[in-house]
Length: 88
Image 1 (cartoon, rainbow, N blue to C red):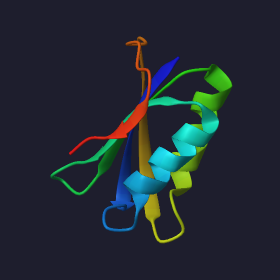
Image 2 (cartoon, one colour):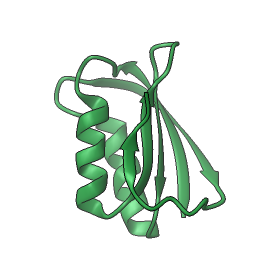
Image 3 (tube, helix red, strand yellow):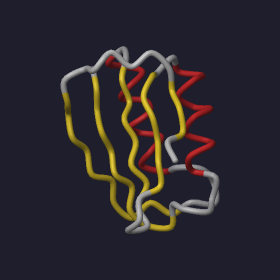
Image 4 (cartoon, rainbow, N blue to C red):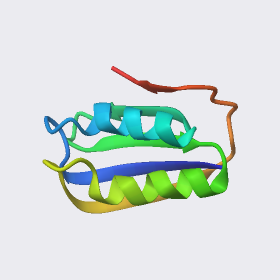
């Protein structure tokens, strides 16, 4: 399963990407996360359906300093991601 999410709110400069990477690794989820120029954070989670869903639920809250006002979700075809990384 593969899901792309876009988090809106106070999500940059609050360790969202690094915490996301650690959470994804702990859940065995592959993909990536990046800051977008419009102030959002975009992430792709790929792996077991339950693990991907846990990451989507995590993304709704983010780390303790974040404030997620809205989370957009898009289901996608799996692309064979094998690790989780921060894109720059």
